[in-house]
Each structure stands twice: as structure tokens, then as C-alpha cells.
Image (cartoon, rainbow, N blue to C red):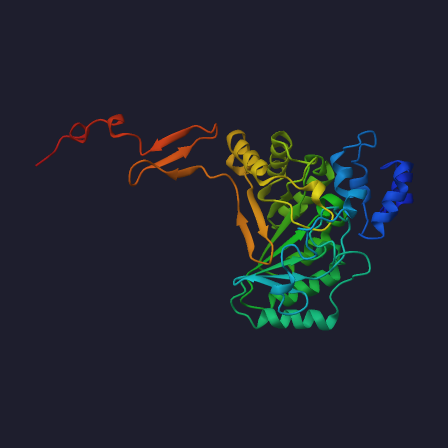
Length: 364
């Protein structure tokens, strides 16, 4: 396989050894419906001898994707109802999404925008981008712009820099956040030109890295993150809880520690969205809550993401992690669970403390 080749067909996946010949017809059927691309960096991580390889599960098409359930939605998080103008989504008063491009370097098999993202979709037209930037400029409450898509770092640095400079001209936009897989999917693309483009904004820029398994954080990926961070671009993480990929405490713990070791702060662990053909990835919320409870007991606070559900219909994200506190038996008291699940009364019973009169003698 050529170092520069991105795998885009069943033929190429089979030739690279990622899947067997017996899956050709299934892959071709799925690829006619949903976008397919696997970068060389990610293809190199696949263990072809493991039928449940967590990297292959994320990126190699499966016939299960053609099984659409009644609850699944073309627009599972409700972009469309909150899109005041093409390319912009605004669910919250202080921030807006700017969908610069509808293509990615790699296509996740669980993508929540899989009905609108793929090859040939391209970037926003010049006129559409002008209108989107005009909308943002006319809304002084927008403090943060989140670049998404598609993957905004799939754009050429020149085009990215032009947009960042335009956003920098909007005084009330103080922060730009970029959601991407590129540092893991194509580490070499994170070069001086890309970093200079990001910094063209002139104010605070954050990069949110999407990775779901610790094997994605290779030495090359960590080096790409280091180039960003050393240049003054802080990073946070986002991951999706996926059946068969990371739905066990050991894998999640290793992933979150790997982020922190790479100086990427764990941010969100997303409950999988109700995207078409993704039921085989979904995990029960009860399972996700229990995993978060187990992480609390075994990992540093630096390693704790927030478990989030993006509510269908565009109603936004809600934290759904375990609840460690409830009302106690007396007014003003609480029962608080420790990481082992044992509950403790807070404040403790009064007799646990010495009488107030003995604490310190009075001086009248």
C-alpha cells in the first residue's frame, strides 16, 4: 500500500488486508450508501487477524449499517431546525457551529452526520461562507464559534487561514474551537502551515480531538498534538462510547490517560446518537453511567470526561453521568456515594464531632 493512499473502495480495503475477500459484496453495498475512507495512518493500526478489531469496527463498513431502526433519524441531533442560514447551527445563545466543509479525511461508521457528509459534498461556497460570516458578525451574543463539518482541518491551510482571519475581524467572537480527527487520522498534515492558519484568528483557539481507542494515539499522533500545544493551541478531547470499541472500564481508562499524557484534556464522552444504521454501536445509558462511576474511582480528576447525551430535536447536550448525591433523612442533610458505591451521610452525625463548648475556651 502506498504511504499516501487513502483507502476508498472495497478493492482497496481487501488489498490492504483490512478485510477478507468474503466481505467484498457487503462493503460495496454499504459504500454505495455511506461514505468510505480510511487514511494510511489508521489503516496501519488494524489487526487483520482480529474480527472484532476496534479500529476496523470504527472505519471498515459493515452490513449492519443497512439495518435502520425506527428510532433512528437523518438529523439525529437536530441541526436543521436550528440552522438560521446554510452552514450555521445555533442551539445556544453564546456560540454557533460553522460547518465549513462536508468532507472528512476518514469516515466513521457511526457518524451522526452521515446523511449529509461525504465525498463530493465539498466546502461552503464563497457566497454561503460570506452569508454565514455576516450572520455571526450581526449577532453580538456569539462569543465562541465552533468549526465543524465534516472535518475543518481537511481544508487546505490557505482556505482555513482566510476563514480564521475573517472570524478574527469580528470583535465579539473571542474563541474558536475546531473539532477534528486529523491529528490521529493524518498526523503529518498537522504542519507549520496548518498551525499558522489556526493562529490566524489572533485570539483563543482550541482544538477538540476525536479519538475513541487508545491505539489511535500513536507516537505520530502525540507528536502532532505536541506541535499544536507547543505553538499555543490548547487541546481537549471528545470520544463516543461505542459497543465493542471502548465500552469497558479498562479501555476507557487507558484512552483517557493517553489523552492526558499527550496534554489533551478529556472533555466529552458522547453517548452514541440515533444516526441511521448505527444500532450495533449503541450502549445502554445505564451501562455508560456505570462505566463513568468506575472511572471516577480509578482515574485522576484530570482524566474524567463528562458523559453527554445530545438530545434529539436540537435541544442540546445534557450531562447524564452517575448521580453521587441525594437528599438525606433530615433537612439539609445528604447521602453521598463514594467511588465504591457506598453511601455516606453528610454532614456526619453530630456525635462524630467534639461538643462545641470543648472546641475552644471562651474569652469574655
